[in-house]
Amino acid sequence: MRRYLMLVLSTLSFMVSTPVMAMQQEIHQHADMTQSFAGYLCLFIFVVAYLLVILEEKLHLRKSKPVLLGAGLIWLVIAIAYQQNGYDEAVETALRHNFLEYAELFFFLLVAMTYINAMIERGVFEVLREWLVSRGFTYRSLFWLTGILAFFISPVADNLTTALIMCTVVLTVGSDKPKFVAISCINIVVAANAGGAFSPFGDITTLMVWQKGLLPFADFFKLFIPSIVNFLVPAIIMQFAIPSGTPAHLDGRKEKMKEGGMIIVGLFLLTIVTAVSFHNFLHLPPVIGMMTGLAFLGFYGYRIKKRFIPGNLGIGKDVQSVPYESISDDAGFDIFSKVAGAEWDTLLFFYGVILSVGGLGFIGYLGVSSEFIYGELGPTIANTMVGIMSSIIDNIPVMFAVLTMNPEMPEVQWLLVTLTAGVGGSLLSIGSAAGVALMGQARGRYTFFSHLKWTPVIALGYAASIYVHFLVNG
Image 1: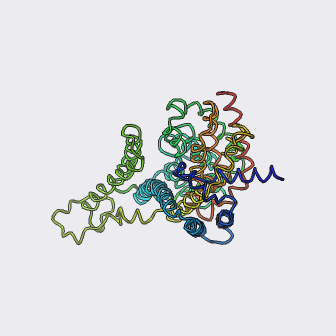
Image 2: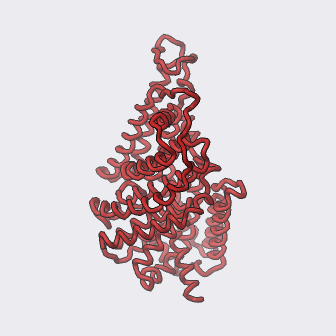
Image 3: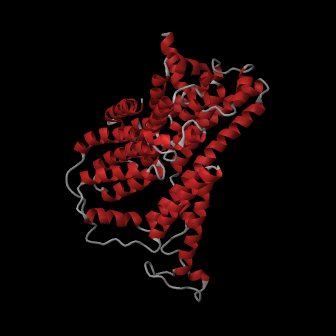
C-alpha cells in the first residue's frame, strides 16, 4: 500500500510546474504544504475540476469554467496558508511567473486562431474542400490525406496550428458524416503530435528541451522513425472504421476564394517563419514573432477594407473618391472580428490548467517524489510515465517538471522523454493542445469519449514507438 501511495503521489507530481524553484526550496523549509490540509485541499480542488472537464459532454458545461474556478480557489488557499506564515510576497512572485507562462501561450494561440478564422472567412478551406471533392477522394482517402498532411506540416508550423487547419478541412468535407469527423479528428491529433515530436519547433515541449540545451538541433530528427510508427499503427487500424463512399458536391456550386485568401495564407507562413527566426537568431520568445505577424494581417486587412465597397464581394474597386462611411470590410472582413472569433473556451481552459498546476507546483509536490521517480523506478519507466501523464495533464507543465528535476540521463533517455511528452498527449483528447482545441472546433462530433474509445489502439502505437526508439537510437 505504501508503494502504491508513493506511486500515486509521484504521478500527481508530474502535473506541476515549479517556478523560481530555488526560492521555493528555501520557503518550504518553513512552510511545507505537501502534507498539510491546505495541500490536500488544493489537490482535491484540482481533481474535482478535471473530473468536470472530463464530463463536459454529459454535463454540457464548458471545460474552461471548472478549471477557472479551480485555479482561483487553489491560489486562494495557498495565499491564506502562506500569509499565516508570513510568506505572502513569495506567493505573489510565483503567481506572476505562472501568469507570464500563460500569457506567452495565450497570445501565441490567439494569433494562430485569428489567422485561421481569417482564412475561413476568405473561403480558403472551402476551396480546398471543393478541390478534394472534385478529385473524387473517398472518405478513407481523405482520412489518410489529412493525417499525412498533419504529420508533415506540424514540424514546420506547430502541432496545434496544423491540427486546427486539418480539422477545418475535415469539418467542411464530412459535414454530414459525424463518424468520419470524429475518427479523422483523432487521426489528426495523433499525426500532429507525432509530427511535432521530431522537430525543435514542432511542439512547445520540444522547444523547451532545445532551448535548455539538452539536445542539439539535429538530434531531434533521430525521432523521425519512432514518430512515424506512432502515427501509422493506430491509423492503419482506425481506417477500417471509416464509412465508405465519397463526399457529395455542394449542390453543384463552385466555391470561389475571396480577395486576398492566398496572400493571407502566405502571411501566415511568414508569421511562422518570423516566430521561429525570432527564437533561433534573436533568442526572443516565439510569441513576439507571432504578435509581429498579427500586424501583417492587420495591415493587409486594412488594404482589403480600403479597396472594397458594399456589393463587390469578389471584384476590387478603388475607393479613393468614395466617402469613407460607405466603405465595407469586404463582406465583413475585420481583423478584430477574427480575434473575437477565437476559441475562447480553449484559451481560458489553458489559463485554468496552467495556473492550477502552477499552484500545485508551488506547494512542493515535485520535491516529494522526484527522487522516487528517477531513483527507484529508473529513467525508462519514469520517461514512459511522462507520456502517460501528459495525456491527463497538458504536456507543457509535465515537461517543465522534468526539466526542473533535470535528472542525469544519457541522450537516448532525453530523446525518449521528448518523444513520450510529445506523443503521449494523444492518448486522451485533453492531453494535448491539439486535442483540446479540436474538441472546441468540432464540438459535439469529436469529444472526450469518442477519443477514449480508440485509446487502446493509440496506446499500441505509443508502445511501438518507444520500442522502435530503442531499436533505432538505443
